[in-house]
Length: 123
Image (cartoon, rainbow, N blue to C red; front, side, top):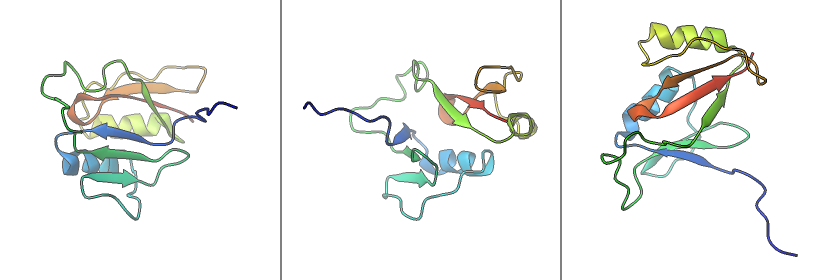
């Protein structure tokens, strides 16, 4: 029987400033650090899939990218999309879109660390 993939198991955003990106996810989104992270990254205690910010891999030129992550849709789940959206707006987060209904509950998008486009959905 051929080997198969079960699904995503780990997601990491490559960033130039790991401490600033980690602070954004902690302070604005409420993520908590996992007990252990490698020296070049900050891993968060998210479920079902672990999430991290990390230094760029060798030969990754983030300065030459039109926008980091272009073409990848990263969705984050929350229990209260409206309240989180208001928190992000109050904190001056760039490009926060209006709340919209979707098949996955209320959604909105915003620009996260270093220009990554992130979408939030839920309650």
